[in-house]
Length: 100
Image (cartoon, rainbow, N blue to C red; front, side, top):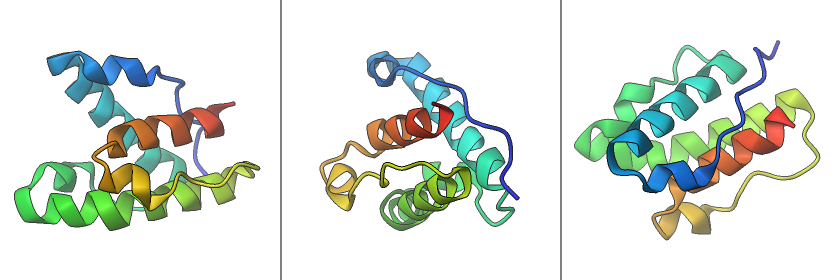
């Protein structure tokens, strides 16, 4: 059963240094609340080695799962977004697709 819909956010806010981290943290928590997956821990994204795994594997999989749960017609952003270092932008855009 999916959780509440995430909040719409502007991906441009990620460019503001400290506020961007806050927005990214809130987006990760929105993703966790939407999928209601207890195994997904947002704090792991900020740990050195585990963060790489989370950014390239766990977050895209959770986004795809959240989109499927909410019945979104658009597919999740591709791995190329994450490989180019735009994972936070891809996360925000995917959550905005879910929010409507």
